[in-house]
Amino acid sequence: MTIRSFVAIVFLGLLLSGCQGIVGALVLPQEGIRASEYRVQTDRDAVMTTSDGVNLVANVYRPETNEKSPTVLVRIPFTQTWKNDLAADVIGNFWASRGYNVVIQGTRGRYKSGGMFYPLREERRDGIETLRWLSRQPWFDGRLGMWGGSAFGYTEWVLADQQSPGPSVLLIQIASTDFHGMFHPGGAFSLESALFWAVRSRGTEDVDPSFGDLDRGFNGFPLVEADNRAVGQIPFFDDWAMHATKDDYWLSIDGEHRARTLKAPVLLMAGWSDPFLPTQLHDFEEIRRYANPKVASGVRLMIGPWTHADPIRFPDGGDAGSYRQASLAPSIAWFDHYLRGEPFDPSWRAPVRIFVLGENKWRDEQEWPLKRTAYTPYYLSSRGGANSAAGDGRLSVTPPGEPEPPDVYRYDPRAPVPTRGGAMLGPRAGIHSQVDVEARSDVLVYTTDVLQHDMEVTGPVKAELFVHTSAPSTDFTVKLVDVYPDGRAYNVCDGILRRNYDNAENPGNQPTKIAIELWPTSILFRMGHRVRVEISSSNYPRYDRNPNTGRTVATESNTATANQTVFHSPGAASYILLPVIPR
Image 1 (cartoon, one colour):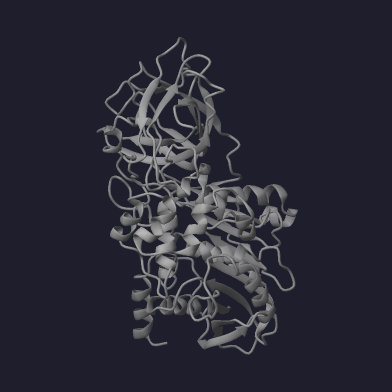
Image 2 (cartoon, helix red, strand yellow):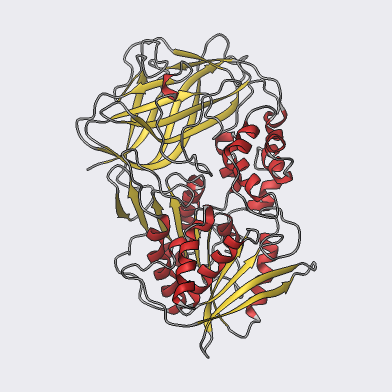
C-alpha cells in the first residue's frame, strides 16, 4: 500500500458514521500501540454457501507469511457502499498488518452476501456454519477472535457458547444479549432508536435517515404505522413494535442466558449514553456470577463517555474524547494477549474501567456495582406546586415528617414532553439542555439545595414513587439532572415505567407504589451545582407515547388525557435512590 492510498483510507475512514465510525482511528498512531509488522494480501469475494443454499461473501485479509496465524472474524450487517468497502479495508489492513488473518463477511442479505435481510434472525445459524467453514481454511490455526459493536457485537454473542470450532476470545462493543430489553425498556418502546435503525437499514444502501423522515414517523398514531409515515413499510420495525413482551419472537433472537454459557474471555465496551448500557451491564454481572470460573475471572468491562460509538458533547464545550481512540489500545492488547500469547497490559489488571463524568477521568474498579456504594434516598417534597422549574419542588435526604399535598399534572399523549438527549441511537442522543422541558406544567421538578461539596453518583439509579392515575394504563418517567450554578440544567440519565392500573383496587385517590429503573451512570456533581429530578409521563420520541386507553399501544389510534398524581408524605414517601460513592 502506498503512502498516498494509506492516507486516503485514513481520511475516508474518519468520515464514516454510526457503528462504522468505530474503525475511524484504527490507522491513527498512538503511544503504546504495536506498529505494523507485515505486508497484507487481500482475497476479495471469498464465498461460503450455507446449508440452505445462500452465498455468504467475505473479504479475507492475510499477513504475508508462510506460517499459520490467528484469525479475527467480523460479520457486518451493512450494505455494500463505497464507505463500507473502505471501512472493511481499514479494519482488514489494520489487523492483518499486525499478524492476524481477518475475515470480514457480510451477514445474510448484507454487504455482498445473498439472501434476504432481516436483522438478527439468521445470525446464529449462519455464524455456526461460518465457524465450520473457517476451520477448513488452510491458513486457519485454530485461534479465533471476534470483533465488533452494535449489531456486529450481536453476531459474537450468538456464537459465544460454541467450541471446536468456536471463538477463542471476544471483543464486544455497545451490544448485549438482550435486544428486547434495549427496544422495550420499562415496558415502553425505544421509538427513536428503533425507527432510526429501521429506516437506515431498510434498503439496498445504508443511509442515515433525515430528521424530516424521522419526524414524519413520530408525528401521529398508531405507533406501528411510524415506518409508513416516515418512508414506507419496514416489516421488522412492525415486529419490534408489536412484540412488546419477551415472547417467542424475542426468545428466538435473544436466546436465554447466553452470558452464562460464555466459553471465551470477553472484553465488553459500553457507553453511558448508549441504549444498550443496562442490558450490557446485566451481561457483565451474569458472566461474573454464572460463567465458568476461568471466563468469569477474565471478563473485562470498559464504560466510556459515549453515545452509540460517538463522544458525548460536554455542556461547557468540547467532548469526552473519541470512542475510537480510547478503545483502540485496549482492543489491540486484548487480542494480542489471547491470540498471540503476549503479556497482558500491566496497567489494566482491574476488571472494570469507568469514565467519571463531571470529573472527566478514567478510573479502575474491582466490580460493578461498586461494593463501597452508599445507596442514599433523596426524597421529593413540595407544597403541591412542583410543576416546572419555577415551582416549589424540593429534593433532600430528609424524609417527609408530616403530610404534604401531592403534586398533580395532566398527561396528554398528543402534547408529549419532548426528548432532550438521552441514551438512544442517532444524532440527538447525549447530554442536552433541559430548560425548555422544565418550563412545562406537566413536568414535576424537584431540586436540592446548592451542594456544599462534590458528590459522586456511580451505579444503578432507581426511583420509588407513590402515584395515582385516572387512566387504566399509563407511563411515568423520571430524569436525573445536573444543575449548574448559573441555572443551566443538563440530563444525566432517565427511565420509564409502563404498566396497567386497577383503579377499582385503589378507589378515590389512593397511591400505588411503583419502581422505575433509570440508566446507570457515573457523574461527579460538583460543589456549587444542584441535583434535580424531573417526573412526567412522556419523553418523546426517545420512548413512544402511551395513549392511556388500556388497549394495545402499538395499534391504538385513540388517546385519552390522564390526571397524574405523585405523593410525598409519611407512608407514601417518594424518592430517588442515588448510588453515592464516598470520597
